[in-house]
Image 1 (cartoon, rainbow, N blue to C red):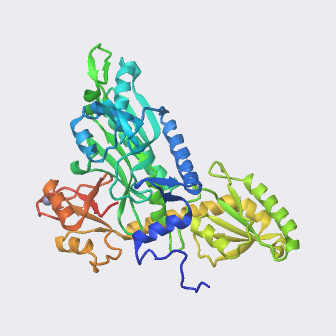
Image 2: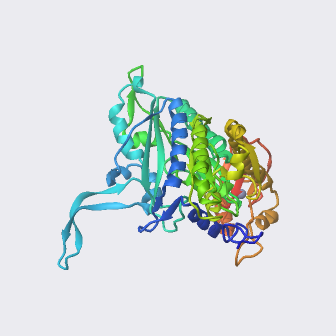
Image 3: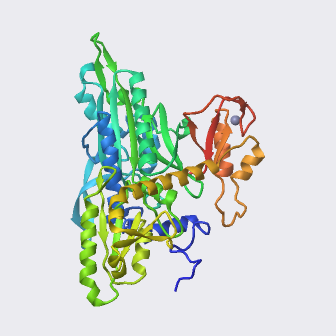
Length: 506
Ligand SMILES: [Zn+2]
């Protein structure tokens, strides 16, 4: 039997956050590790969440004029070599295809044969191969802007995998745009950052800080990288989306040129922007509690589960009739332009059934027994409240109110996460305080510590490196909504004009 203090997930977040994460993912039945180290299997409950993220994001992209296309999985080695910083940035994590055939070896096993004249790289990102197409698609300024997005998988070989957060293969989208002017390209970079921030805050209920990266943290080959950073419940930062202004670097590498109205040939200005299945990890670590994950209603894999209760075998028929009728009525309701998605779970497995749904993070659980039916009511529990907190609601009222209840849950999750982020974002001016802030009291088994430190930085990479080496802390972003403020660098005491966000990060 469970006692009152027990939680559905062991260990708790406070006891061991990384292990809590692994156990919460497992208990939710969203995904699992695969036979290939570093690669994950996304199970239906996790994939449904991803589909909801994709649909919302795709709608937002299209509303800004972006169109979808698809480019090859393989990139010729020579393409990657075209942009020097780019190849250097990705060289250490490339999967390389060197053969195209298998032959029977002397011992009967299969051996690779048919060596390729030029090795192919499994795309880690597609700037170079998409750039090759763009160079042929674009002739005149009249062809611009070109606004293209691709939904795909990419591979970045991962030595320390963590499901959804860092996997060798992951699902994502990458947008690539081409413009006639620098100003227009920067505007697009910012526009897409705003789309990511909106997805994170309005749909994932995950508050973010918008900013730019320091040169050391930029996308390889970019002139400027914009990002959204979210705070997880272990107070570490998660980069949840990036938008890059690529200047003319990739246009020169891939010969993306256009004829200007004056009939001069000019290099174009490009951008790229991406977000991935990592967002699912963000949702889990932003909202989950010691009983498992909690899904924000707007992207939840399903909204509500109906659990009929049969006290006696003869109850079964009329309880099921009531339940099926209720499911049908609920499915006719909408929340955020999406039909209410209802699960009916009539397994007779006792209390384990309710706990399974708690661990899956479904927003609303409903119990329906003969006594409730006699009252024409249902017994309702919300995932944002304690599992003991259940209320009886008249059937008609529940059906009418379900969009409002879901909206309340969505808002509660956001408010909670925002309060947590604010509570743990602290302006620090003293070097000693800064070091204490990021040093756990228990070095053997570090407790949850740190947060976002808003501190002055002189702009020197040396200071950045020193702080990273000493504390494992990096500059997550230079906030966009930053006010100029005179101060001295947290590391070297040299003058600084603004505060930046320092944090430990995923
Ligand atoms: Zn400094």
